Length: 333
Ligand SMILES: Cc1ncc(COP(=O)(O)O)c(C=O)c1O
Image (tube, rainbow, N blue to C red; front, side, top):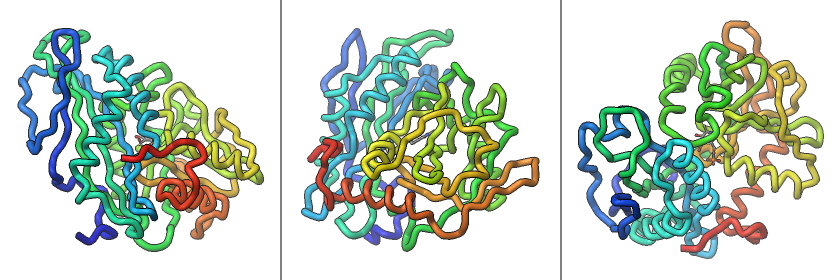
């Protein structure tokens, strides 16, 4: 397997772990090689978007041991997604154990240390109950599958162009933007597709009530560096990124002040560095932001900024076991 060249795609592995919620309780989780799910055509997940998911990674460390990054945080985020959609809430313990079991059963798919690759885990929760009316359901399935994924940057880190799309709303202020549910992604697909065709690496969305503040990217949070500050938007409609939370901790440790606050579009020109952060990209520096429809581009340069690179290194050193896990982020499998 050429681990380094793997993209961010589904790759068939040994199997997945499933758990069914029925008659008021979670049944015993089981492992299966089956890649398909037998689903009733009236299942509420297919019609009303009653589905939530997560994304996290397992890494093979320098010492050859395999560890999952902040798995309990993903479990808690899935709990808030489930609560928001009135789906059965998976217990943290069940979520964590299922993730560990998937990694154990797919050990041959964990990319070796030094390749920059990792094993991506995709926990998902969806309503299986057949129904026609729009209402909360009491039958669901929880699945964790995995796929090895290559490093986001194959060689050196190259900042990408971003498009600030003021013509498309990702999430409403009191909608579902702060939880990880399918509908949020459905609403952003069109903007993402268009931006890709135009050669942008990412789309940034603004707040949907005033379109004056930066929210986040398609599948990543936004951050900026100004002098000795790490700045990231605060909003009721952005997903609380676990990567971003980690970068805030690491930035604080490096002596930066951490500002989690509203970030106005007018401020963009004053930032020294800008970037996207999330499980898939880790830290992806942004070379420029073009404001769609306004013919205005803010440049941050073709070289990645020094603070973004230090943060990326600090995070990856913990993930790959090169630095002490001083915040208790890693769960050994
Ligand atoms: C909309 C959105 N924002 C932010 C993130 C980054 O979150 P995390 O760092 O937990 O992967 C993701 C990816 O999960 C996402 O889909």
